[in-house]
Length: 233
Image (cartoon, rainbow, N blue to C red; front, top):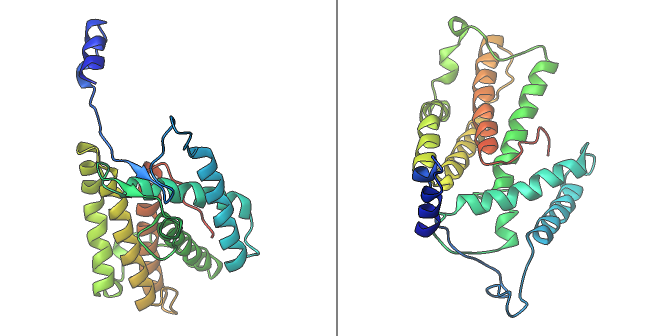
């Protein structure tokens, strides 16, 4: 790559000095390492198609009445492959494993995307009940945020921009991907520990504000990784 960069410099390209070689590891399959000379090649298109088919079967089993099931399966299947790749330290080799990549409960893309969909569902239910996230800071019911689960999310709101900066500066998207997994963990802990749509409006709307904020973090982070954030799954 030094020769490529030098060639660009000699050609007078002004951006040649900014070029960086970003190295990455090797992906292997259970069948072994790919080799074009031996005819052992697995095409990305085939892998993505299979991912979509597998996710579609999972959705058909768990949520058969889901609207736009085909579209969601496409988003989750492709997103799962992309997230798993980007969530590994880029210089490390890794073995392709369908069970891990499509796991909806682990440190995976489907887990983060499902959490986003879950938060979206809470916000929709709030609207159906005439509730919406607070718009005025003066109206926040701070007692609704005085618990370990909410505080973790507040810390996420503060730390998220730094995670993005680090990922960019170090050419290491796994920093952002792991941050999203952590945020999803914190969101699920909060959801499981505290009923969001309570009868007291000020508490409900404060908690809805927190839900809306953490959903924005997940949507933004997934978008930066080139991954869709489904509203339903």
